[in-house]
Image (cartoon, rainbow, N blue to C red):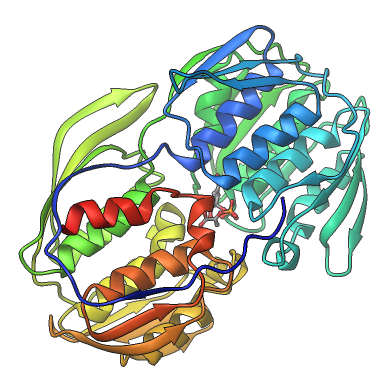
Length: 441
Ligand SMILES: O=C(O)C1=C[C@@H](OP(=O)(O)O)[C@@H](O)[C@H](O)C1
Ligand SMILES: C=C(OP(=O)(O)O)C(=O)O
């Protein structure tokens, strides 16, 4: 993937937000739909796939390893898989762009196939730690040649048959959990992951749906996830629900811009993903779930969000894994609330597309918000509903969530806010700005 030229954007206060918005398909589920479809024998069909750059990087990598993946004119994606064990040696380095999920999950798949792959990515991805996936996958027998600090570019040489392991996650990471489970798919015997803190469980749900022998038990040390390897996956018809992380920007925007009243359609409310709704409701947000239903094994609802005065809270640290990608926009909500918000226990924010604690502290500080940075979070003094000062140029640091969160902050700023580069938004939400225009016209 060639580097996109920076796309600066300036915003002035606007609103209210009104109308209906359909958020794009969930990014985590979209990646997994393509990967698991590519490992099933036969044709899987995927509706509602997120067509963002991160997911397209996964599609390109799975094609490079032998799967056939096509988008029909009906926007349904058809995947012809190679079968577990059937991945082929890619002819070139796999370019993962900006996507941590693609990289870590595919490292897991390659680890137990008799192939070698090199992973490369953009400057943001090349600064993120891969040692957390290298460690368990090395125990399974894969060999790695990584750049200093366990970073990209890195080469993986898979071992087939690999060695099944029992692995206790040292960090709350669904990507590491999934990397081990995916390596376990083509490993004889049972591979086990023990998860002291629950993280998003899409891999578990979807692998079961594809026919893998996978069990989840509650143990004394947390959840024990066991997968029997040399699995045969059966092709599936998948409907991807809307991404709660993308919906988060509209939840906060409508909550803080006076007069707003929107309906966000088809939002995945899997309990391992719904932390932001809980936190915003604790702050006094007016978020009503309408028509709670089940789509493709996931809870889904429409969310009606109306402007409401927000109050600062202590964000329960145990919510962190279920809203890890939503902290940047939660910080914006906190900047507009009455009183102080304290968010701790979110150290993982430091190893995302950017250091989301440092970058958001600097960005909010630049538009006049009083923030105190902590090693594992931030304290924010809110404006009590008054407009923020604005009047600054913000560096988005190749991080889509920083760009979108600071756009939301710009909606309630007295002076123009400029974001130096909003191009990264295309990784997870290509239609974000046209949707904002439609909601505020
Ligand atoms: O498994 C996944 O799909 C994801 C897991 C999370 O990362 P970590 O596992 O690094 O916490 C999250 O931040 C990322 O956006 C998507
Ligand atoms: C952290 C994120 O994604 P990834 O790790 O896949 O780059 C995100 O989308 O906020």
